[in-house]
Image 1 (cartoon, helix red, strand yellow):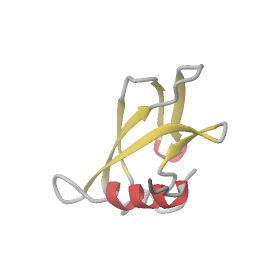
Image 2: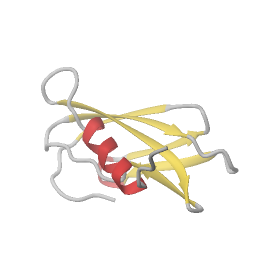
Image 3: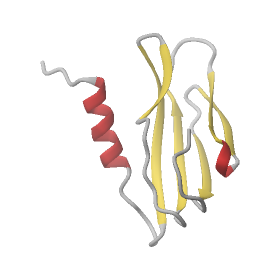
Length: 102
């Protein structure tokens, strides 16, 4: 059995999930909330989009321990949503600002 490090897996996911789909200027991304070494994290942790692109995030909460909800937010784009376990959510926004956002 091969073991892939979490960092390598996240990098592969970031590369695979950052490919634009749909019309030009649109990007569809997926994020999965998991528990890693006792911490709930969204993975992949880094996303790159171009200023002006319409961004659609599909969000999945896969943490099996309570609480059964985890928030996802990007304040600079007024994105804030609670994602319940096994109930995917989708958020959309236009990346109208350049920068690094957490």
